[in-house]
Length: 178
Image (tube, rainbow, N blue to C red):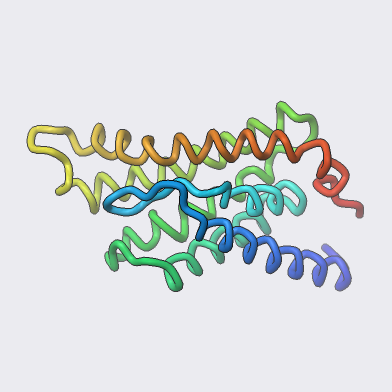
């Protein structure tokens, strides 16, 4: 159980990093026609928070960010499954990075697993909600993997490059003191 001071610090850091992620999400380098975009590394603050505080707080921060992104950003769908899998759960998956602590290879594995979790959520949404956009004769799963892989692959590459560059300067920050 965390003490009150630690809980306050965690909540403040969550608020600051969620806000930073939202600002970074607004800087879009490329946007797909039915949603999804390449940003300036908007996943990084949530990933750093998850690594510092652990998976459970990281998942919560991702859920909050995903909900905020849906409520405040452009809306591509109001279908409940799309809201869950394109926003809330997808961004919550970034908290999985909190399961991986320690060396740089472990952290990069955590970042990759977290982003892959987000990708899986978008693919599920693509197959269940967005399959009508697939060209005639194209399998919905193939279409969803291709569509979501297009932007999220680039987004993942940016996140991993930026994260690896931030590793050394933020190493002591990511190792939370008890």
